[in-house]
Length: 157
Image (cartoon, rainbow, N blue to C red; front, top):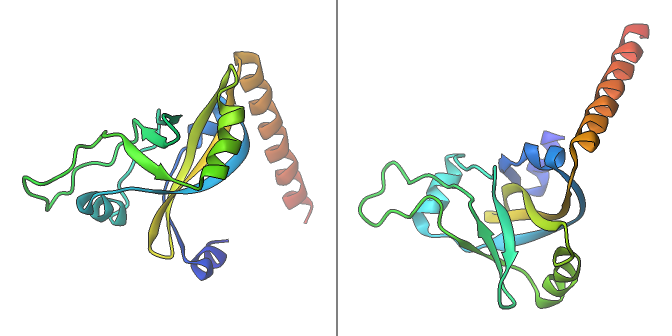
C-alpha cells in the first residue's frame, strides 16, 4: 500500500485515529488548506496533531479549528501560532453538499488525515456522528473478532 501511495504522490503527515473510535464516519471529502510558510516547513518535518480538531462552516467558508501545527524550530519572530484557525479550500457545490448533512443535529465535520498530494497540503474531512458508549464497545468487539479470525487463518496456513 505504501508503494501505491508513493506512485500517486501522497505523503502522509498525520492521521486522526481517534476519529473512527469516537464517531461514525460517513461521507469523506478532500480539501486544500491555507498555510503560512513556517507551517509548511513544520508539516514537511512531519509534525502535526489532529486530535480534538474539527471543521466548522462559517459564512460559506470552511475552517479547521484546534489543529495543532507546532512552531517551526528554525523560525524567527515571524513564526506562526500553533493552534490558529485555518481556512480550508473546496468548491461551493462540495461545501453545499457537506453543509446539508453537517448542520443536522448530532453531526460534525471531523478531519481524519492530513497529507501532501503532489506537493500540496490536503486535509480529508468526514461527516461524523458521535458514538454512544455501547456503540464504542460494540465496535471494539467486532474489531477484536476480526483480528482473531485473521490470526486463525494465518495459523492454518
